[in-house]
Length: 306
Image 1 (cartoon, rainbow, N blue to C red):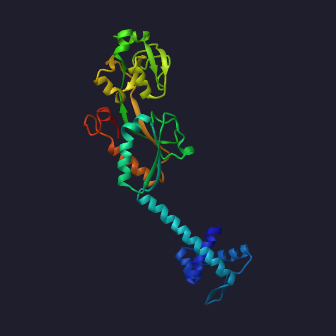
Image 2: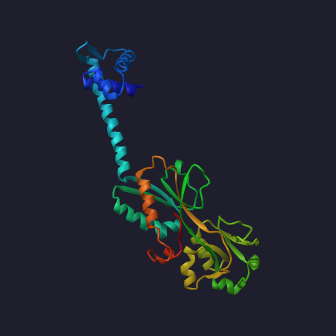
Image 3: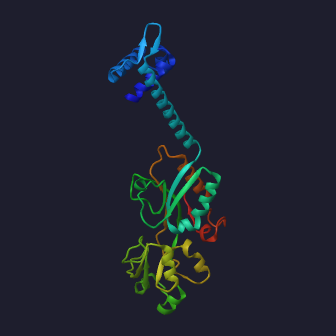
């Protein structure tokens, strides 16, 4: 109420007329006159001396006008600043992403984005933990799997297949499983997305002997390379090791859950230009499968989704 009255008062002073002020505000002259009278009554002072032909500010009214005018200027400047933020990406962009995605892909994309939009600065946390976007002030979080919070917007970036693999040393010591049922006798390296009691197979229900549990796929890969057991990992993290023979892919016909990566953000409504522009840039930067536009460890592995 106070800000509205200050705007009406300022407009009356600058128009030197209740009639012209009412016209510029899209209000009735009687409404403008009543609001000024109520403002003076609330403040307990006379702001304007008015006759049928002329308006003149009182001494108190002059001081009040100068303060109100500054408030209106600050308000207009604030609106202009917000609109400029929506016209060109600028400001701090806060991102959370899985460690491997950040190392293999996000750093390069973000670097190119910031070169194209120099008014953007960024803070990135590479982590395996669940982040609270609203509580922590995160603009965009990349995460594996759909978010559990239905109030968040999730945009699928890509899918990547998984496969079972183990080191030659492990297989020489424990044997190579020829069927899914033979996995029951093998040592399992377990990731959080998988059941701790069963191998992550879509068509089979095979118990597993969990010997290592971890929440990082790079750690799981390194443990498998060292002979700790069999692990089900995304192709993007094992491709080089399989190609060079340091890991052996097992049971290629076995069906495992597909890994999905989503970009998650709080809302589409009044979305900041920096967020919208980065999401579009990120999607445009995702490589087409088997194009070789990025390093082989990424480019040949992604199944894109719009």
